[in-house]
Length: 358
Ligand code: F6P
Image (cartoon, rainbow, N blue to C red; front, side, top):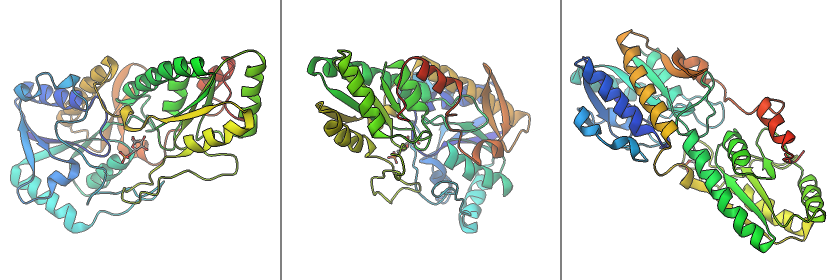
């Protein structure tokens, strides 16, 4: 049997471990693996753009960031446009992909992706492609899986950044604002903020009032605290305000960014404290995956091959209660998994004395 694997959307630490898991498990079954280049786009050129992958090609790749296959979050297969809007992939694109896979003899495709790419995978499955999904995103915002690989690495980077900001903020008696990724979900901000000892965490799921944040900082000042660490998710918005975007309209989904500077600019006059903003950006996506993401990635890759063997198409690998199983892709993509404002994690943050801005 010949199977294909591709990763699509933003890169994410742990992608190479998934590829390694796929190749290892397929090889044990005597299957051939075609790795398509630059996501779904690799399915398009005549004959397909791919590399054949053997276990020898994957030696040592688990520790590498990025993806050996390349990826893109733009192009011909964008099925998700904006929040909740789905576009139909043109028939000529579907047929070119179908013809190439048929010509190569590739019978099933593993799609490693987040919400957008799995929406594409679902459409392809509905059009008769044999597709299995693997949940990938640093944002951890997919339904039907307790965790995506990549999230732990992103959180680890946030914690490391906060450790560094804390010492410089403490030295200068400053308020340090760290803007983190996560799109419309606050998981990276919440986990990173708790792990890194932030005193204020601002999430997309909880509208915040900067006067309340300023009161909290002023109270800390009275108590003799020298500095305050604020983590703000890129998708967070001020009470009554809008999402802050970079104005980049080239991506298929709205590009978020800039809320950290707004928070810093407004907090400074309200508190009289010297305030600095740091945008962590793509540092959260790059670099070596943590061991958790390497292991999760390998398990996901192996499971995807097992799902093909069992003919479980249209389904996605899912991680629930320490167990790697599977769910219909449709269960994962129709709406984002967001932080529950009255859930246990937010409750824990409040119990730790963290201000959530409301
Ligand atoms: O979905 C992953 C993610 O890193 C988001 O957290 C972020 O908003 C977005 O991708 C950035 O995308 P790009 O790499 O296109 O700037």
